[in-house]
Image (cartoon, rainbow, N blue to C red; front, side, top):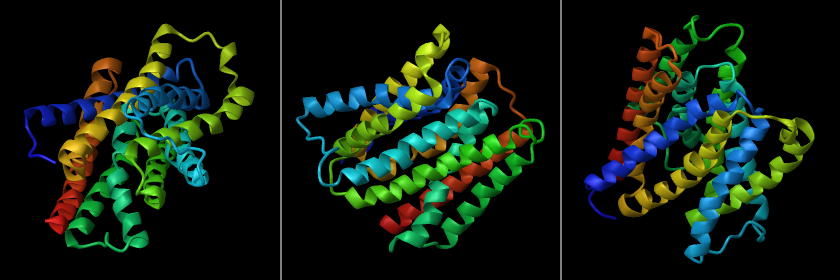
Length: 295
């Protein structure tokens, strides 16, 4: 690993922009596609760049090895479920709210880590960060302009999608000795296989006449927001390590809110801004506690 240079910070910002742009693209995709189809196309197109990299670097894909069930379970929990839940929720919730709700992943992972790992226990700084972050989410749910009786459940499902990422991360510890590219490629393969029967018998997307905008969005979600984003994450991890890469958590909700306003003209209320600030500050304190522990 090396000391971060200008190019490293540039790549980090690009990664944050790519992941943040997923939310308004999901919103556009929901205009023509159902949530199962969006999830399927996302993992299908997302697998292409990752598997091509594995082929180029001669990294063995172990999707059907003796550990196949772990790849299948993680693919379901870490890809299939959250991609479906987010797509379902964003249909009736603004994409900027989805970006803020999904940004709680570092906070949720800290809570889960306290109970399921030996070295991730709460301390004063972490507890303070978690309380601030989740108070921001509770405050966000009090915004009756954007979250009401009609979309309250959808907002909760997006929050549940965030929790799926956390559970998936814990499950990934079971195969932590394997290469990142192998794990990502394998769980993408299983996510595709799991979704094929659901998309075929429930939504039957071949009967649709999607708009050009929605079609571009689902391809972008797969190839760029999933596939290319993972490749970029691999490079940042290799060059600068996990702590540097984790700083992307601060940027995603901020960029997600800005991009949704630019491209979709979504409403930004004072409560949205205060909730966004609380979540970002909460993440900052949680990450600060982790850095102190390592140093």
